Image (cartoon, rainbow, N blue to C red; front, side, top):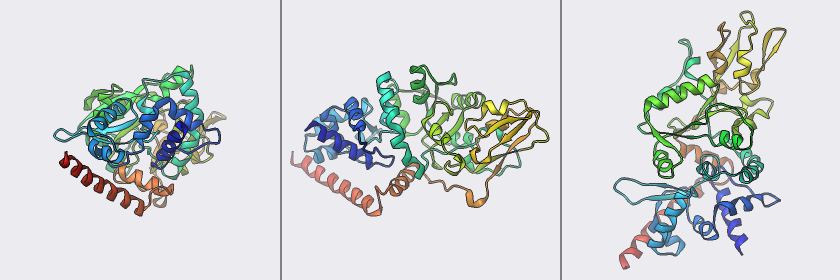
Length: 379
């Protein structure tokens, strides 16, 4: 009977944009058992992608408003669902996908070696869906830009950051879990930047610290110096920025397994290389996170199919042998306007949320709000 609840929850999470597919071994059920109690799993089934008040979810779950508030707050504090707390309105609750930017990341402070092993064994099953639409995009580090390069506002990391009003930095779960397993690199761990409503949620749950614009820019500068790829949300209006390395980041590690990563990544740029000026120092090889460069006969050999336009090779080349250029127009990725649109597109490409499905979900949410209001009036 208990397994049925977890199977239903796994299916529920799989219907969210990033997916949570079933496996023959039932590994996804074992993972969910580590995070959710049966009662929490049952209540989570009543949350959707639409933020809703506790009274609406109470109506749907057939429990009292008081019980709903208490249980939903506990689940939000435990990193099992997402919550928004407006200043002059009741808190809102919505489903959290498992990964990325979801339940797994919300437990960055609660990791154990056994849990890390189990989740890392499962993650390749999930990440195959991200190839349908990247949830992150690559933008060049500021130090790699040059005056002749045509670059749009949403492609400049500094402009993306300056457009925000609230900032928070959290530990990178990818590097933390590798460190806990005695692996990984020595690149900065405190490097995941969060904006908008995420700032409040991370702060309430103690999984990050609030910072200002100046420190945010300093973190990005240190990330570039350390050779980290800058990856904001795959949207023009971003909600986060990941600073990623090729040895720990789950997304980049999977991307590196492909012979032509630049066909899968969302990036409008490509590095080009002047062999005549190259001195063969090898600095760029150490900085490239995608294994796109190697040294042969004291000269760099570049595999353009592996370049994702991050600019790390450009910024430290002592002979200025590298520079970024825009890809051809037909290779320019379309960038959704916001993360909600990104999520909708990914869900549609996975066959999980068509136009009809979205309309039904919105109508059900409106109907449940009306019915919940009438229930409150009766009491």
